[in-house]
Amino acid sequence: MDVSDLLTSAGINIAICVVLLSLYSILRKQPGNACVYFTRRLVSEPVRGTGAISCFERFVPSTGWIAKAWQATDEEILAVGGVDAVAFMRIVVFSIRVFIIAAVICLFIVLPVNYYGQDMQHKEIHSESLEVFTIGNVKEDSKWLWVHCLALYLISCSACVLLYFEYKNITKMRLAHITGSPPNPSHFTVLVRGVPWSPDNSYSNSVEQFFSTYYPESYLSHQMVYGSCTVDKLMKDAERMYRMLKSIDPRFLDRSLPYCIPGGAAHPFMVLNLRADSVSSSTSMDRLQPSQRRQECPAAFVFFRTRYAALVAAQVLQSSNPMLWVTELAPEPHDVYWSNLSIPYKQVWLRKITTLIASVVFMFLFLLPVTFVQGLTQLEHLDQLSRRVPFLKGILKQEFIHRVVTGYLPSVILMLFLYAVPPTMMLFSAMEGNISRSQRKRSACIKVLYFTIWNVFFVNVLSGSIIRQLTVFSSFKDAPKQLARAVPTQVTFPCVLNCWFNKTSTPPTSWLPSSRLTYYHQAGLACPVK
View 1 (cartoon, rainbow, N blue to C red):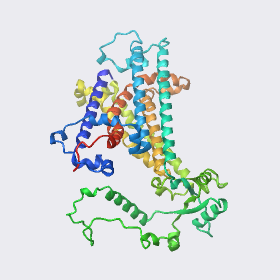
View 2 (spheres, rainbow, N blue to C red):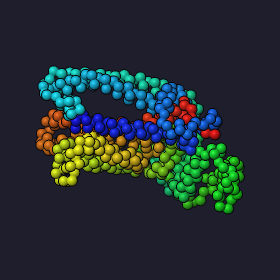
View 3 (cartoon, helix red, strand yellow):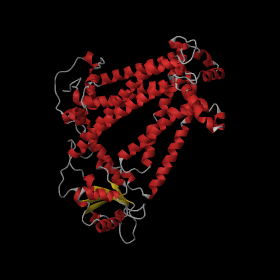
View 4 (spheres, rainbow, N blue to C red):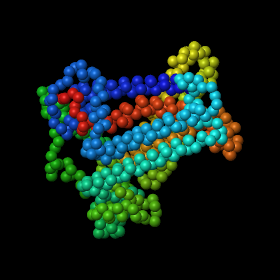
């Protein structure tokens, strides 16, 4: 792959990025999309009729919203999206700063050393191979190796310094948020799992007797976890419908239209008041049938009088058997992953081992598309493909088509496969038995991180060179040397992949939502809703 192929890929990706930004800029100006892009503002602030913009301006892309979103301070983002939004924005800013430092050092220090690393007749820049810009072009035993070491130290030290200050600021903000927020019921709650079965007592009585005996002064009460049933599914559907109805602004409802409620009156839905004779008053534990009692799970939420007592109970080993009476701090109510609470604790470790094996198998199965895509970037593989498929010979000889196939098509194919990775890892994390949604997302992110490191670095190197030279494995002593030689020769494909990922995948999925988040608070509506 030469420089022209890389520039072709970069040009196509930049064009796609501009198109996506233009579409977003146009769609956010349409009055019908106000509930999609400005839901938070419509809920928190009254609608202001400052006058509608012209029809022509509604279909003309604008870039002013990017500058306004970028000018938002951390305090404004914290007020709108919380600590998580601020941390995400700081990650974006930190990444941009490290990238700028690395780009300056590599562009003005490393690339000239690599380009003139050997005495050779250079071509024009656009016809040069990307390998002449790598460390593989430097002669062995060259005295210019210290330049690469110096560049690595400068980039690493600057990244560590920036990361230290970012972590320090985020830690202060997080501590201020924790100390300033009111007490949460989850701070006084402990989740206990692995409650032993007793033929004489139910799970509820066992929990009450255990904590009343060992924590008589701090124990307050407990709530058992029941298995999922039809009522649980109906409650989930009702909660989902309630959220949908709650998000609708009454100003947008046309009250002249009747509401289609079979057998009911033509009036909107209303939330019932909490009265003593409501449904909640008839759901006490005393009225549960024996069949309902049998649906008790060996897990319960135990409430304590103080946060210190809850913390001690969560950290102390409650039994000599580590599989019984397992305690941990309970997640927040909206963060609980209810379907996993009914899983017996003895199955959790088996599930983790199974999902680990499944993740490793999935990573190795991904070798097939990576190897195929890696082959498209190699000229010798394209020559073999054109000889086997005669009608492609004339097509691949065209210069633009050849640049697209070697510089753009591989990254597109691989990214389409990579889009299936996060849902798969999220499914594996859900099968592990995590008790909270945040733990499930964290586990999925760790799996995706390892998957990305494996596929972007090791798989590209292995599929590109070492697999074609099986003699490498005949001597383990020479493996580091062969790996060092293979990395520079296979650096072209990661460059193309990063070019595609940064130009096309990042804006619509990463920094664009964060910019919208700050824009909710900072910028005014482009098209006011009357």
